[in-house]
Amino acid sequence: MTAFRRADDGQAIVLISAVIAVLLLAVGLAIDAGQLYVNRRAAQNAADSAAWAGAVVLFDGGNVSQAKSAANADAAKNGYSSGITVNSPPLSGNAIGDPFFVEVSISQAVTPTFFTGSRTLSVRAVAGATRTGTGDGMLVTRSSGSTTLLLTGNGALGVTSSGVQVNSSAVDAISLDVGNITAPYTRVVGNPGFAYNDTGRIIPAATSSASSVADPFYASATVNLPGPPVSSSKAAVDQTCASAAAVPLTPGTFTGGIRVQGSCQVTLTAGVYILMGGGSSLGFQILGSSTVSITGSGGVLIFNTSSSWPGTGTTCGSIDLNTTGSVSLRAQTVGSYAGIVIYQDRNCTGSMRLENSGTRTLDGTIYLPNATLIATQTNTLNLNAQPVVLRYSATGVVNLTFDPSKVAGGRAPALIE
Image 1 (tube, rainbow, N blue to C red):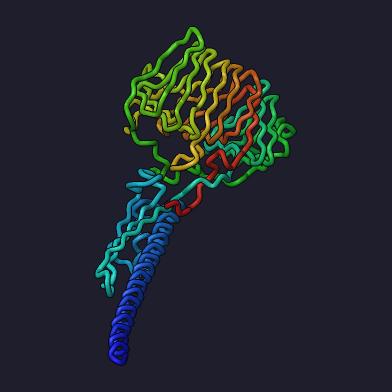
Image 2 (image 1 turned 90 degrees about the horizontal axis):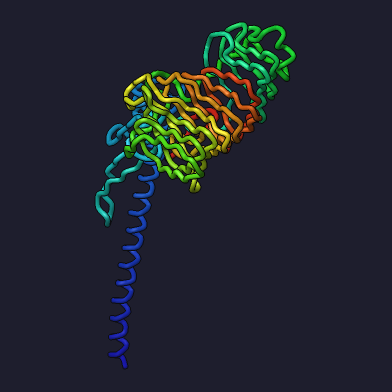
C-alpha cells in the first residue's frame, strides 16, 4: 500500500508541474497580448491625432505641404518620429484622391515579447473635411456684380430649415422684380444689397453688410473638392425615343455626355457619372417627355466636365433638364461626394437649366462653382436641394427644403477611417 501511495505522490507532482507550466504559458501569452494591444492602441491614437492635425490645417485654408508637416509634427510629439507615412490626398479608402483629406500610416516594431517574439504593428487613420449637413439653404458665391440673385416675372424663392446667403458686395446684388424671397434669413454682403422697392419682398427683411461665407468645397486653388477620377470609358448616349423605351445606364465616363429626348425612360444605376462634353457634345440633357430615375439603394453623382478631363478644358456640354416628364436624382451618402447630386467642373461656365413643366426630385447639393442655376419652370418646384452656385436666376417658383440627411451642407474636420 505504501508503495502505491509513493507512486501516486510522484504522479501528482508531475501533474502539478504540468498545470503550473500551462498557467505560466497562459500568463505569458496574456502579457504578450496585453503589450501588443497597448502598443497598437498607442500607435492608433497617434495616427488619429496626426491625421486630425493635418485635416485642421486643410480646413483652415492651409496647403497640402503644411498639412503634412502638421501631421508629422503631431506624430513626433506622441513619440512616432519614424515609421510614419503621410499622404494627402489619401491613396486608398473612401476619400481616395480628395485633397481635403489626410491619410496617416504608422508602422512600428514592438519590443520583443516573451513568447511571440518581435512584431511589427501597422495602423492607419484618415481625417478631413466631411459634410456636416449644416449651412445655408442657398449660397450664391459671386463676390461682386449686380443681380447675382435675380427673380423676374413671377419668380419666387422659398427656403425652409435654413436661409439664403448672397456674397456679392454690389448695392443691388439681389433683384426681385415683382417676385419675393421667403426664408428664415436672407443675408447679403452688399449695402443695402437690394433695390429700395424690393424691401417688402424679402420676408423677413434681409440683413445687409453681412459677412461673406466661404465656398464649402473650395479652400484654395490646391485644396478644393476634386472631380472624380476617370472610370470605365463609355461612348456618348444620344437617343430619341418615339415611345416609352427603356434606356438603362450604368456608372462610367461618357465621352460626349448623355442626351435623351422624346419619351425615353432612363434608369441610372447608383454610382458616379462623368460627362466629358465639349464642342457639339452633350453634357447631361433630359428633353421632351423623358423620365429619369435611380435603381438600387445608392445615390448618384452627376459630374459635368470637358472632353479633356482630368485636364483643364473650358468647353463643356450643358446640364439641361427640359422635360415634361419626371427627373428623380438623389446624392450618395458616403465618400468624398456624399450629399452632392450635381457637380459641374470649376472650369465650365455654362448654366444649368431647370425648364418645362415636369416634376423634379433633386435630393442633394447642386454645386456650380462657376456657373448660373436658371429655373424657368412653369410649375412650382419643391426640392430637397442646396444650391451652391455662382449666380441664381429664376422666372419660376422654387421652394427649397434644407434636409441635413440629404445635402452636403458645409464641411468640418472629422476622422472617417
